[in-house]
Image 1 (cartoon, rainbow, N blue to C red):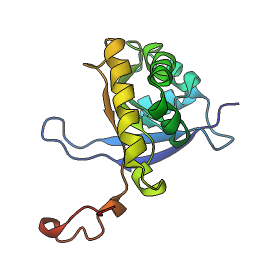
Image 2 (image 1 turned 135 degrees about the vertical axis):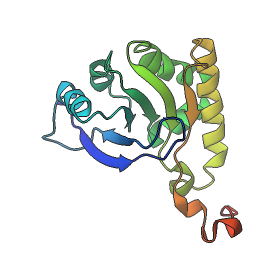
Image 3 (image 1 turned 60 degrees about the vertical axis):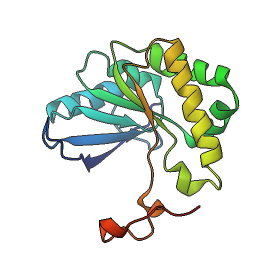
Image 4 (image 1 turned 45 degrees about the horizontal axis):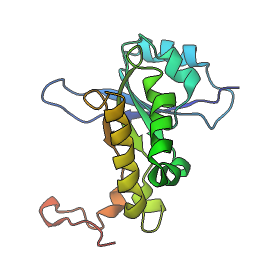
Length: 171
């Protein structure tokens, strides 16, 4: 049974396209809409950017030809495996990205979720994982279409105000 939850978030302002609303979608709650119903809800509200907290194949298929930009995430649990093996990264890209592109408009891969805040010494794991995923995209000839990034928590900036005095957490 597909478990999906929707969390609305305001998108950032862009000079080129204006303000937008995006949706984060995960699969760890029950009694929520089917993938097809999720896509219908997104379309009815004209929500075009979506971040999937994991690479749910049913939802990726439902997003095919939907006109929705998709950021698909590598779970925190998968980051270490992908860091350790370029073959694991290549398999992950083949299974969760290449299998759906171009019908599903995957524009980015989010590596983990706030890994720098949740895992000690995460940079040593995160950066090689991101490199391996990028290499896998290059091998699949998708690197010009799909970017690799990582979501970070604002707690890496201990004192964000005033912005001119903000610095990153030393660790």
